[in-house]
Length: 344
Ligand code: CP
Ligand code: NVA
Image (cartoon, rainbow, N blue to C red; front, side, top):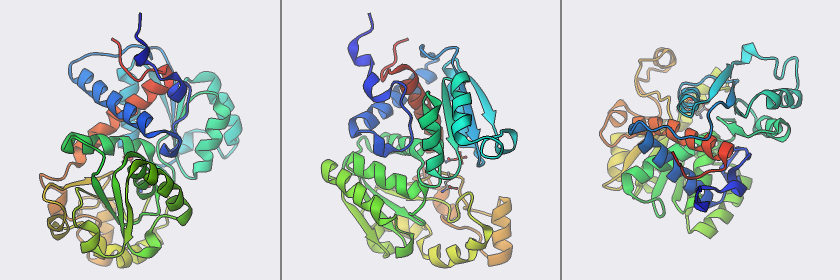
């Protein structure tokens, strides 16, 4: 007999994972607990049961290293098969509507991951697929990233509530928006430290203020780097130009955001125990094609974070990257089985 507390079918079974706005704080924490357990079991060589023989589709309209690999490795660990569809290899959006694609894939697959552009696309897929759809990043949200970030924060501080997280850079996009949501849901204090025009949109701030009221989180918006980072336990940044944006915006972003680069002075101004997080990929040196182009055009060796901070012991970015896989495994396991606890 499987004990009752193994399941939370109401919250998860057959459900899509589109934005954390749709989940209660308790349900988000249960996914993080599940991911931690799955991580421990993987390291112990144990394979959870429940998903064997299932098939998942991975649709990537934008490039990816971590998210794609996380879905593929997690699927393999759970005994599932995955099919990767890149933008040039599928008919979706070009010869076939999202609605039709969803209905076709839903007949063949047990779950579908989508990475791409507008949130409305992943919502449309979820509406018609009849199987769980997982958001692997849209312009607006990056919910699987958030689970990995919160797990990494809990690994480092032993708690979530009351943690001060400061996000520096373009906070209007997927990562900034999603951090504000997860912080306000889970009682972490979120500071957006950026020029005013890069703050999240007012409607989303209003929604998050409601979550924050319930959880006790504080939301703060400031243009002042020293004020915004004082007392931060977590300093977080992301690229200044996101996938899908035109190259022409680089000049403006560099001009607007250079002051908000995460430097060693920023980290010294933060709490004594502060850690640095970044969803990655990061421009912290000139070891990349884009990094070299920016160096040639603007004379910069590093962009949103200095190499010194990126490589410092308080930088937890590779633990965070590993946690992507464990947390994505938790999302698939919970939505495909309704289980929030593993029984081997
Ligand atoms: N952080 C993240 O989503 O990385 P990828 O773009 O490599 O998937
Ligand atoms: N804001 C970034 C996140 C990458 C994981 C982008 O959308 O490109």
